[in-house]
Image (tube, rainbow, N blue to C red; front, side, top):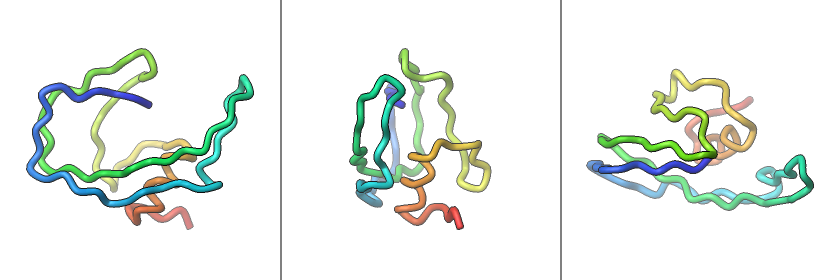
Length: 87
Protein backbone atom coordinates (compact mmCIF):
# COMPACT_ATOMS: atom_id res chain seq x y z
CA UNK A 1 0.00 0.00 0.00
CA UNK A 2 1.35 3.39 -0.92
CA UNK A 3 0.23 6.59 0.73
CA UNK A 4 1.36 10.13 1.12
CA UNK A 5 1.27 12.11 4.34
CA UNK A 6 0.87 15.81 3.68
CA UNK A 7 2.08 18.43 6.14
CA UNK A 8 3.79 15.70 8.12
CA UNK A 9 5.49 16.69 11.33
CA UNK A 10 6.98 14.39 13.93
CA UNK A 11 9.20 14.68 16.95
CA UNK A 12 11.53 11.80 16.06
CA UNK A 13 12.04 9.49 13.07
CA UNK A 14 14.08 6.36 13.78
CA UNK A 15 15.06 3.47 11.51
CA UNK A 16 14.03 0.35 13.44
CA UNK A 17 14.80 -2.29 10.86
CA UNK A 18 15.36 -3.53 7.36
CA UNK A 19 13.41 -6.56 6.21
CA UNK A 20 13.79 -8.84 3.21
CA UNK A 21 14.09 -12.50 2.46
CA UNK A 22 12.15 -15.48 1.21
CA UNK A 23 9.29 -15.02 3.72
CA UNK A 24 8.55 -11.67 2.06
CA UNK A 25 8.17 -13.22 -1.41
CA UNK A 26 4.82 -12.60 -3.12
CA UNK A 27 3.33 -13.83 -6.38
CA UNK A 28 0.56 -11.66 -7.80
CA UNK A 29 -2.54 -13.28 -9.34
CA UNK A 30 -1.41 -12.13 -12.81
CA UNK A 31 1.93 -13.95 -12.39
CA UNK A 32 4.39 -11.20 -11.47
CA UNK A 33 6.70 -12.14 -8.60
CA UNK A 34 8.46 -9.90 -6.08
CA UNK A 35 10.72 -10.12 -3.06
CA UNK A 36 9.88 -7.20 -0.79
CA UNK A 37 12.76 -5.21 0.68
CA UNK A 38 11.46 -2.71 3.21
CA UNK A 39 12.90 -0.07 5.51
CA UNK A 40 10.79 0.27 8.67
CA UNK A 41 10.71 3.56 10.55
CA UNK A 42 9.15 4.63 13.83
CA UNK A 43 7.86 8.18 14.07
CA UNK A 44 6.67 9.76 17.30
CA UNK A 45 4.04 12.46 17.74
CA UNK A 46 3.01 12.39 14.07
CA UNK A 47 0.77 15.20 12.87
CA UNK A 48 -0.61 15.65 9.38
CA UNK A 49 -3.17 14.57 6.85
CA UNK A 50 -2.97 11.09 5.31
CA UNK A 51 -3.84 11.26 1.62
CA UNK A 52 -5.06 8.09 -0.09
CA UNK A 53 -4.29 7.15 -3.66
CA UNK A 54 -5.82 4.63 -6.06
CA UNK A 55 -4.05 1.69 -4.34
CA UNK A 56 -5.48 2.46 -0.89
CA UNK A 57 -8.88 1.46 0.46
CA UNK A 58 -8.55 3.13 3.85
CA UNK A 59 -5.71 4.57 5.90
CA UNK A 60 -5.63 5.00 9.68
CA UNK A 61 -3.21 5.00 12.59
CA UNK A 62 -3.57 2.19 15.15
CA UNK A 63 -1.89 1.49 18.47
CA UNK A 64 0.02 -1.83 18.41
CA UNK A 65 -2.36 -3.36 20.94
CA UNK A 66 -5.39 -2.60 18.70
CA UNK A 67 -4.21 -3.56 15.22
CA UNK A 68 -6.85 -4.75 12.73
CA UNK A 69 -6.46 -7.98 10.74
CA UNK A 70 -3.23 -7.61 8.77
CA UNK A 71 -1.98 -9.28 5.61
CA UNK A 72 0.87 -11.79 5.72
CA UNK A 73 3.57 -9.37 4.56
CA UNK A 74 2.67 -6.71 7.14
CA UNK A 75 2.64 -9.33 9.91
CA UNK A 76 6.11 -10.54 8.89
CA UNK A 77 7.48 -6.98 8.78
CA UNK A 78 6.17 -6.15 12.27
CA UNK A 79 7.47 -9.48 13.56
CA UNK A 80 10.97 -8.90 12.10
CA UNK A 81 11.37 -5.62 13.98
CA UNK A 82 10.00 -7.08 17.23
CA UNK A 83 6.70 -5.19 17.46
CA UNK A 84 4.55 -8.34 17.43
CA UNK A 85 4.90 -12.08 17.80
CA UNK A 86 2.95 -14.50 15.58
CA UNK A 87 3.75 -17.55 17.75
